[in-house]
Length: 374
Ligand SMILES: [Zn+2]
Image 1 (cartoon, rainbow, N blue to C red):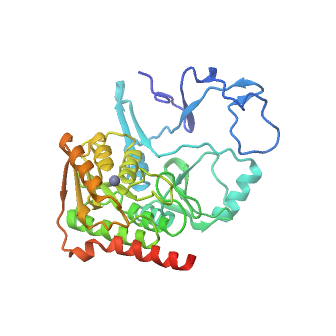
Image 2: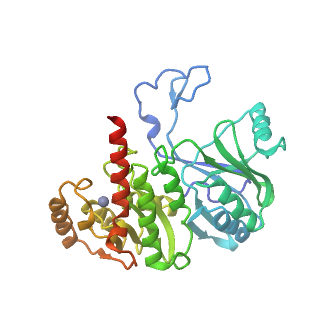
Image 3: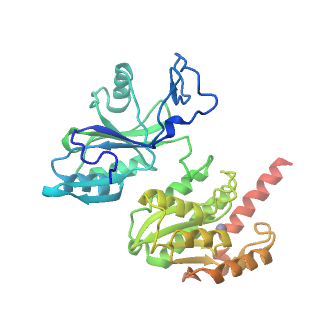
């Protein structure tokens, strides 16, 4: 077995996972030589020669203290551990997943510009890691509280991101950045709803116990579903918990993301899978603001989720939101018979009207905008 990068011993080494044979594929529209102007277009070919297709960017750091580096990157900065392997003579490697990987090439003028914006002119290291987070301020405070040296506090950049700079072990600088305007893949689309998604996402890494266990988490999903509904989005949210820790969250993105499969539970499961670096979520529990539909049950079961615990029963969903509750119920029944997944209503102190607050918030917002449109 030869995983990309393992065994390479150069600090700051960048390793690319390459899918064999991809270079042979000719993709139409990309056979001409790359134009000489600056462009953001993708060019799999250079001077007519097809480049191999890269499927992963892995940055390999040689560290003197593996445990300390693992604590820093995993527990302080929030990367998730994908693999840990031991080799002969005490050889050890840990692979951490950071979501999407990109390689930014900056010329010296750009490096000076970035340094001016981000650190007040303090030069950047030649290799710098930049990690995108939901909440740059929170992530920076968290790192500082763990004793990480802050080079620069979060600053709003001219390209509308919030960036901070940390001094990591062995002089590797880390930029934490939050895109303020744009959407984060898989979750938040545009408008006011990213705030709700970000609030929920901030729970990732917290223990279920510290959030009030099952009742506390259900309460949060109902609260966030109400705020999400008030932004005009379908009023459903969910969190994924495994081994007593929140590993993923999601808000319904069906409207803003124009995605019929963007149910809160599905978005939360996708989020958890991406964060842990595996589609296998065996042993996880999904907590949802509302009883899940057949699709969500299938997706959860397929991912190895053992249980879905919900707050509001499906009977409380108004017909303006689910126009055919009988069909929904029949599908749920048919699917559930075949699944090992357990689905049950969880304990909350909420009265029926409070459980239905997300639907009321959504409908009130919808009515207001309908009146405005007239
Ligand atoms: Zn669903």
